[in-house]
Image 1 (cartoon, rainbow, N blue to C red):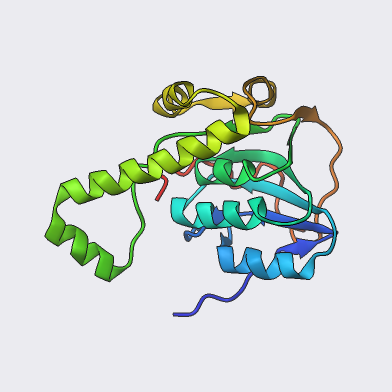
Image 2: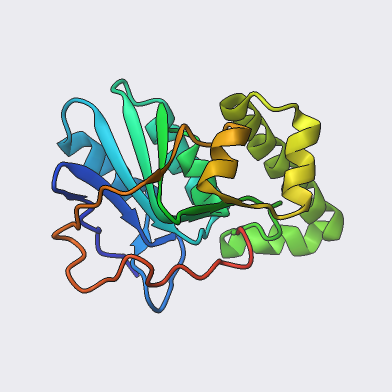
Length: 207
């Protein structure tokens, strides 16, 4: 079934409020294809408003790449939460701002999304294949976090193992963000019925 494209651009910003590449009863699905289409509409510096409990790691990596490779300056504002796959997207910002009360959470990938054909291959290959896939994706996210923060990979590994939840100030201290406790807020016309803190429960797994 074809999924309808999401309108993501409003008030001069790219709004990534939702579940990354997964269905959610309270949030729209954010897909890399929709982000790519939205970026094509925008001219000049890009401002991203991010509020997500995570979702698909694969989709998150695609969105990270689109933003990281964008020729314009990318500012990412974390309105309430950047957890799991959404924290990877945040690493694409040239400047990362965490609003007052915002949090960031990182952890190891525990589930890998795949097509039915891939699932059949997985069954045929056994559990070792799944472990290898998770290990490979873990290396990717360690590299992304380390490049953004300047932290040693061993420190990143420890944070992932701990499923670290960081306040804005802690995220700035560790290099995951550049500013914290920013109070300025302008609601989007895309989100007339959504409270700032609504729908921010953590997704328990990166898929």
